[in-house]
Length: 176
Image (cartoon, rainbow, N blue to C red; front, side):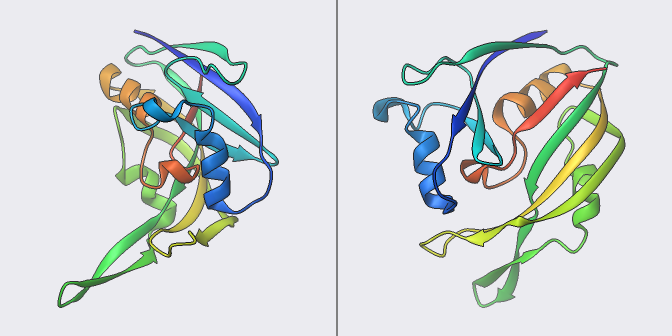
């Protein structure tokens, strides 16, 4: 299976998570914003943006990824490891998953993780201005093996975990 995607390196101004999200979403026309499956990840002052079709508003390059069962890939993922804990009476609060180092092993999408490292990203912590979103970033990297082509393709195209609109969930991969 060959996946075709488009990638843009997009300069970002400011570090407020809401303004960054709006800047990245400006790459797609308003009428298709909700329909586009777009993922991004901050890499310093630049956002690496991946989308299923080219943008009319920025120069994008096509990338192809060959996905085959039993193939191994080097991967990198920034994930949001906040979970919601019930307080009873219909109330809940958001807290970091105490097992964040193993979060990657519990959330597999068409692949098995053979070797990985995790690093807490203190720069990826905050709340949105409306206080409805809390996030805590952990960077994972290592080696994964494809066990289900469709599952891995979905993880690559749709992302992994929560807070994708705030720069989490983009699975970067490279065939070994």
